[in-house]
Image 1 (tube, helix red, strand yellow):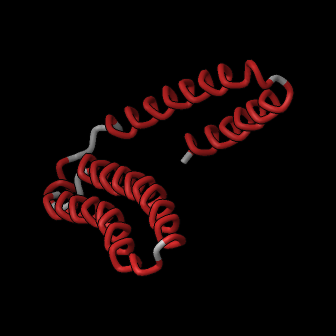
Image 2 (cartoon, helix red, strand yellow):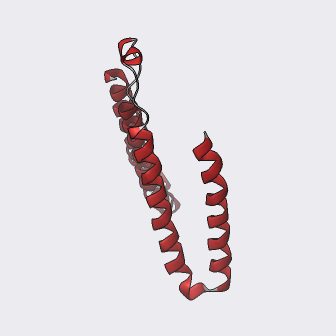
Length: 136
């Protein structure tokens, strides 16, 4: 909890600084944005490493059926990755479907099937997350 109390104000300050840089210097804004993203990625990896390492726990939680933290992180990554992939797929297929429907309205059924297939990617990520949590 203490980590979040320290990280969130720093994160807000960094985002505010990047926003000001983007307004003032448009040429150098991309470099600063890239450097900020890399710094935030490094910080996120440090927080993830400390969360995975954590303090040594006694064998009592494992014996009582506690959930493995690695399985939960894997489930979160599966859902997040599948959701982002589905969002990108729906964005492109939805735009193409609307363009096709504006020219030929009779293609509504085909267009919705293709958009529905793109949405199915998120369901696959949810299934993988359920399987991971079930194995923990």
